Length: 360
Image 1 (cartoon, rainbow, N blue to C red):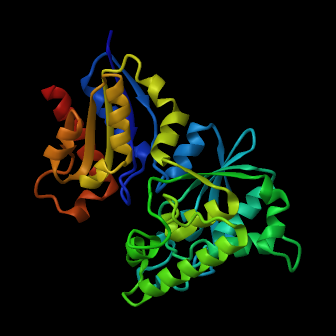
Image 2: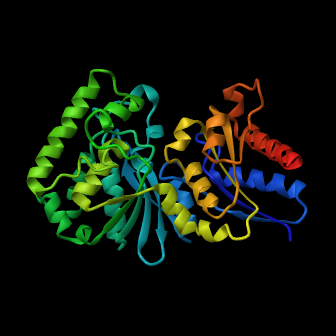
Image 3: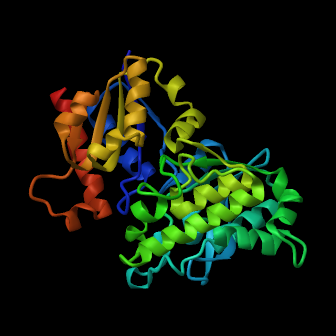
């Protein structure tokens, strides 16, 4: 019997998608392994690539809606729909960091209004179950904009979010795909940890923190409970909190959710090896990111896992954690600007896999 490889590779952010990375690995394997079975499972953890990976895994299709981005400019946002009433929403489609030029980023102004518009559009089409990817947002408004849009679109004129929840919105369930466990406020909160990468200056951060605290206090008084300290409330600049506090959202590890949906554990039966990967493998990989979750699941069935990455920091630590091989696909001396070109990265993956297979 020939060898069986299971591919479960995350996107190489800003460089290539999960599908493109897995196709490169497959070409390399087929060129060097005679009798081979390859199971390719496109991956994402709730961030970049989540929409395509989840929609494909569930057998859905991509649709589009016009919304406003975080600076209130009209953009066309994609979302996935699945037979049976489930929709896949990636918040970055409406308020993603990449939708606004770096010199325009201002989390004091940036709004999640477009996320609410997108949800309202999908609710209006009859979908009631949502899987929401919280990665890649360029906002830090604690979801206030999203709730305003849901009120504008789904409540009677002059109504409140409570009125919107009394209608179709209240029939919806929200599963939040995210591997962020930060609370809304405090030293590990949305403003303190994530706002700077979204364009916040040093003086903005305490103002964003206070805005979030004030909103959480008001919301707790209104509902009689407070989800601001829940793990994941700080995801997407506090969007996680708004989903939990107002819409009853529940978080799941985006990586584990997709691994479950894609049938990863069943695919391990008879496998010789699992190949996973990401753009940069380092200490953060061991903090619950997708490659770690892939490796742990494979390890429970005794299947070794190879880890591919464009850059590797601390390979010894990654090997000690349980990866059978840790492979930096970028040749020594190649600068990052060259290495992140898609055609270069694809070629580097193919060459690296060929070398590893020959040496195995």
